Amino acid sequence: MHVAHMDIPGSAHPHTRPASEVGQGVGQTAVMDLLRTPDDRFGSLPDFDLEARYAEVSALPDREGGRLRMAYVESGPPDGPVALLLHGEPSWSFLYRHVMAVLAGAGVRSVAPDLVGFGRSDKPARVEDHSYARHVEWVRALAFDALDLRDVTLVGQDWGGLIGLRLVAEHPDRFARVVAANTGLPTGEVSMPDVWWQFRRAVEKADVLDVGRLVQSGCRRTMTEEVRAAYDAPFPDESYKAGPRAMPLLVPTAPDDPATEANRTAWQALTRWDRPFLVAFSDGDPITGGMAPILRRSVPGAQGLDHPVVEGAGHFLQEDAGHRLGEIVAGFIGDHAR
Image (cartoon, rainbow, N blue to C red; front, side, top):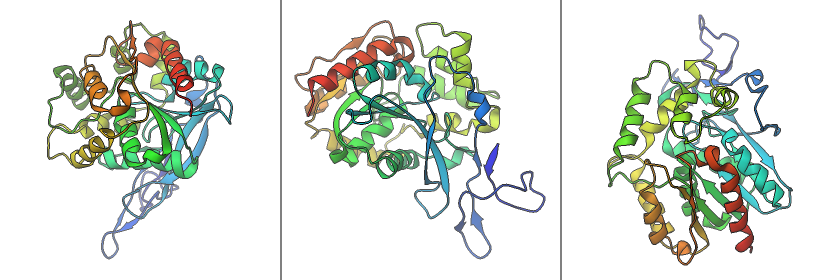
């Protein structure tokens, strides 16, 4: 379903509207073509009956332009301490379903967005419409402008940490605690592991990107067919997959990457972060495992804490051990209540 497209005579989508138009000279416009996954793709999701909610953010936050729709789900008491649960590549908020159930039982309000290009959120149709800076700003606009979240506990995994740690560094007054789970904040000055490069090349070369298979490859446990289908649900066909195709290309892999300077600045802020910072990695993630000791020794707020290792879990520890991760986060929030 196209929700935004340049309205050009003869266009394949003559009844759609532009999401954003930016003057590029006389008679010229730049338009972000947005796709929206039909609701019926999400009709049967195992253990995930939370109501989808939506907010609008700027489609091109680094320019003047139109709006796009971001989706999120909530659970737990509205007045409970809030946890912002950020997923990564190529999953969506469905990944946190077991974590959210545990947190709700512990009285924690969980907010789990779908990144732009994923889940129920609008999907820019071109890979080049995605950038690291835009994803940071999209999540910031949802969490702070639309939802006005405060005293937040960040739970970030994969790109959820790459985005979330930037937000912590740039808006420290909004955050009370951090849980880093199988993630990092690369600056391109340390080589990514070979397994990550294999993943990136596989995504780049695939004619058909099998999202469910990619998630399964990052898990220790075998997913059911219904769970695997839930990870495929946001992407009816290849045209919807610009987000999953873009994200590996946006990870800084060289010191001159466009995101490197902002990430270096974020690291400077994190090395002064003295609020509680828990490193909760799994015991089976070859992609981010090397970041755990760096975070533990670099962030002042991590000092003196008992950092758990989630056993029997792969890169997607929420899928392999979601209840255990939920218990860890709930205990951390309770032990460090403000």
